[in-house]
Amino acid sequence: MNKVLIYSNDLSFLKGLNNYISNIKNLEIQMCTSLSLLKENLEKISYILVIIDTNNDMEAINYKYLSNLQINNIVLLYDSLDNIEESVISDKKFILKERSLENVKALLSYDTSDENDSFLVLYTKKRILNEIKGLKFEVTNIGVQYLIDCILLIKCNDALYNLEKEIYPIVAKKYNVTSNKVKWNIYSCINNMSRNNSMERINRYLGFSYNRTPTPKVLIFTIVNKI
Image (tube, rainbow, N blue to C red; front, side, top):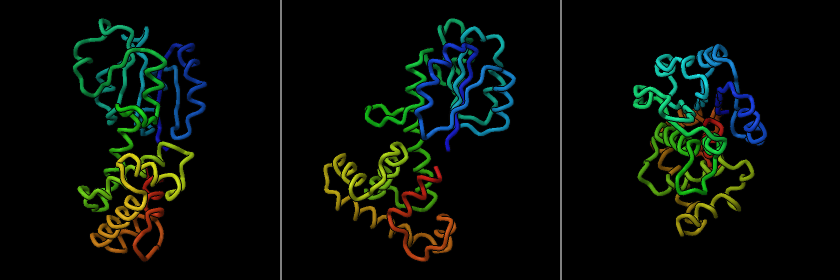
């Protein structure tokens, strides 16, 4: 489960987020109002995203400490850039967003309908591609792109599960091809992947002894669970 940490000392701001957050199923979100607790959590838990509300707390936040953390995605919510030091603005470690509930909701969204993918969609795509490359897939194969899209759809939509009836048709529509073409291109790229790996290595990745080329369903849901 992907973990997100949100810090703010504005209780009304956190309250405004609470109802929205309670409906999110693909994330484990923790909110805190204490800087000491923020630091404690950052040192104990691995987060994919940290959102820090800088409202009325600029002097207390140690940005040098945050910049040195092994976290690539730290979002600073600001009311005015005039209150943020130039060194912080230019630090690529931080993502700056105007302070609003809508901006935080957008950061926590898995919505793939927008032309500009949300942070979590981009993050998930990157994780999927890392898994694909680790399995020695030929990433230029169109079947690999179909495979990535199938994994992304399932990861971002809890209601989607059936490959034949739901997932393949959606991917086929995106590329203006038939569902059968999506299906067989995915089979083909998985067969190529199997030739690039030993059965022992594939079984180790799957977490159980399968002893034959993985089916799309087995491989797709294994990757979904790993990311």
